Length: 204
Image 1 (cartoon, helix red, strand yellow):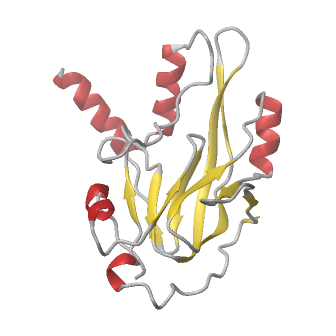
Image 2 (cartoon, one colour):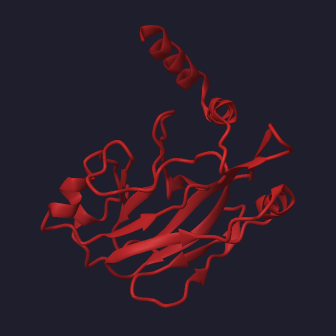
């Protein structure tokens, strides 16, 4: 097993043994899996950052976004899960990037054929990642890395010591629709998360 999870990203950042890179994702690109390990999200917080040791990783992602349709309606655009090979060859912050579509039609086209890029630290240009439906083959982790630092860790908005990107929100609008946002989050939740949410409301 190449990695394990921890909720205390600060431990990794302060540890003298940690020689890791931070891989961050935009709101609309959700990391689902790294190699053999599934990333678990909660209803109230989404994983937006991964701490990775040097090496190659097969990262599974999904694109999801919310767009206004008409005056008071919204539509969720979501892609099928897709894979990309991510190479980490230096310490620092790596960013997964994409050009957000301007409208629903463009978003649907993007969902059919996602185009994402990787911005490496100290690089002026981002590299376009090869997106596939099948999991790509990757090389093993670099042998010179200490075994304690080859374990990617994740951080969530509620537990990270450093600032992290917030979870997906409603479309960028001057007049956000609260009902639409709640409906969006409800559609994203699992049955267990919905039950937890209802129990939390009843408790209040």
